Amino acid sequence: MKNLLIIGGSKFAGKSFINYFNNNNNKFKNLKIILISKKSFSIKKKYKIKIIKRDFNKIKILPDCDFILYCLRTNNKSNDNKLFKIFKKKLLKLKKKPKIIYTSSGVLYGENNSRKKILEKRYISLKKIKYLKNYKKKWFKQKLNLEKKFFGLSQENYKILVLRMFTFIGPSLLDQNYVPSELIKKFKNNKRITINGPLNTYRSYLFESDFVEWIIKIFFKFEKQYDIYNFGSDKPITIYKLANKIGGYFNLKKIFLLNKSKKLDYYVPSINKLKKDFKVKINVPLNLSIMKSIKK
Image 1 (cartoon, one colour):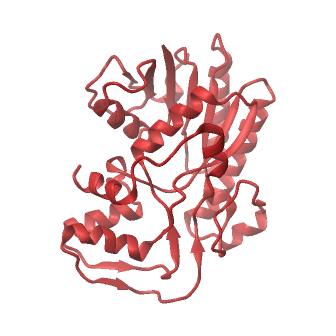
Image 2 (cartoon, rainbow, N blue to C red; image 1 turned 135 degrees about the vertical axis):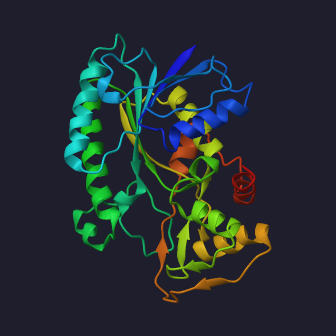
């Protein structure tokens, strides 16, 4: 039996793992999930999932584990550094060195105004920060900072994988402010649907069960000392088409496109490297992802 410890994933990652194992009896029988979270969750299969209901800062010793999924996030770089320092101290106390995945973000690539999927080798330039809007500028600095820290940890003989996350869909995200979730909530509440971004705003959405399965497969297979992979769906769709697709489940109402600019915003990853090394595939297509999210 292998133990996967999830740190800081109570919003999406933790919920996705709990939903997955609550509804799947026969998959990954040789894996147990341990989630550190102050939140309460409904657990159907307690032999598969253990919740440590405490603040991460107040835990003196981490539970023995083979894998760690690090999803801790704060509102600034300084707090990120403090948490990482605490994490490292706890990590050094473990009897064996677990494999670690750090959930970074595709925001590090900056804006993509080319209709080409983003490759891991795309150059990351600090100059791109000035083109990022709202939270993305701060997010860029925080994620880049932590990637450097995890690279440093790999130099201390820890096996580290950085996954640059893109966009997701699923019931675990319905209470958060992501585009598919917001659209579903507005359609359910019979509210006016407006699309503020340009018509050529492309995204791709990986369903939460694929997120879980891919993470587990990666943990069992990766043996490199350090590497970086894009993580998400590589099937592009415009936000406007996504809204119409979701609207089809609610007797489609008129959708208003407020910004008719021809600017191209193509935030879609190439995941060829991930597919090649870990043999992952998209099992839940977008139409089914939408239906599963709506019928939660």
